[in-house]
Length: 582
Image: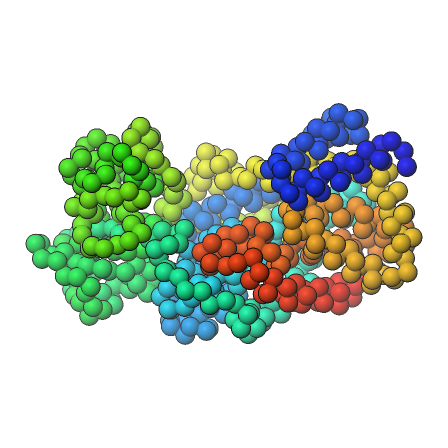
């Protein structure tokens, strides 16, 4: 081996170690490797930086924006709500169909985004159906991961491998090419999640709604004169069934009715003390026209929604909003508050706040900015405000590139760019939202590792290593070699990011395939599928989202995820060589 090839192998080892133990953030590690490639002359600067403007990076950035449009307009939430409403309280079928919907959505939306959107809804559904979240949340994450293998845009890993294939003289994946393996894996995976996983999932006692990272708030909302809820029972309002909000009390004049029953009749002017998530409170406020006592006539697009934490020495500590003059000082409206231990049912305006209380505050960007001088703002949840009127535009914008790419009428990247521009022109998302919603660390990681793969190929390192590996693995035969690379990718995917694992193994696998005269595409598909299906540890982003709320332990993922990983492996070994022969 020459000096360049030895340097490339050293950098490969450094990347593997840094990605695994995360001394630095993965994107910082990737950029460090890129800088060293340029420093050692292993790649020309112009070649290194051209990957940042590659078609793959542009497509992934565009998908982030289009996904944000679907989230902002409540399209994905609406799918889940419609399904739950149609099935009522058929517990098993509600959960099974919900997992199927999640897998289907994940085929076209990032699996992480899908899991993040459905997590609050699944928590509310779990609570309403009196289920344990430890029995429902891991299947949610696994269903979103499975669905990501159906299309080329289901995960960024699929897109990254597809984008780098031309470097190895292979055409990029067709839009539904991976569906040959993705659909069977998803179907068999769902059967596993429906019938086997429930027996393996732990039963953990939790207090839903108090200890979860996803906070439930208490909020006062009033029925204005002439509201269509007038003289309806609480059951008829469907606040619980459709909006997952619980009515804890009703104030009518000076009278307070605590814990009203389903047959309680509400009237215009009644103030309902509701408990629920910030997203559902905002959803019901905008969709049904319920108002706060101090409602402002401000356009929703001009409002921000923030969470404000009551800390020691906070000016609100031990005082009510009125005593402090909160609205007069800041001009903001407190929509609700969250308290870990709810001991009283009282109007928000008359509540004396304690350390640890979280207030849900609405106001203009200028008003919420002024809050920072006196309070700790822990989150900006403005994305909870859904603009349902623009949902058709968001759906159209998302479907357009899919149809164009699948039919070949327009390059997928061009259709993505056109859709993003239309979302900006029609203000479905703002330019500021577009830039903030793009996960720049992911793009930096992908661009840098694409450059690394290019250098690995052009320096002859991939060919040299493949030559050595071919001698070792040749006795295994094509199936044995394919299985070995599949298992290696699964192992590397546990400590590393999916994209990094795929980009590290891909050049080696294709090199060995070429050396031994096998079809490189067979190995490319296997590595893509192996990298996308990570079930053994909670380190996959979709799994990390449910780790805390489900009260899971690390071993829970091994117990439930290992059989699913083996199932995916067996299906892969059967289907991939059949559809993409050696």
